[in-house]
Length: 113
Image (cartoon, rainbow, N blue to C red; front, side, top):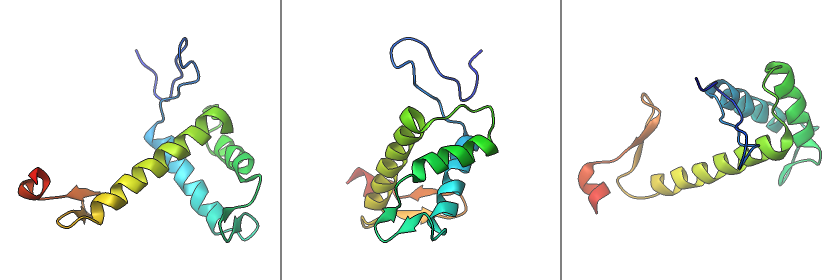
């Protein structure tokens, strides 16, 4: 039975399968740091924010074992990439955000084009 949030051994042994709870905590902590003048600066976050991120996540999810490298850094890259793809879709005519379903909506004809 595959355990949620488990790591695999072998190739990609640091591979971590993020749970919805871990993602929620990660985004929540990022929002918290983004509003904290100690960590937020004009072009992003101040040095050391990743270590603080790891500390807060570790307190919120004590058994998760998430580390800055490779887990958190990799997940942030994935989320940024997905965020850019979503923004690009939403900037295309016919693509809309469905706030009730929390997903992108597009008519089939627009998608087929």
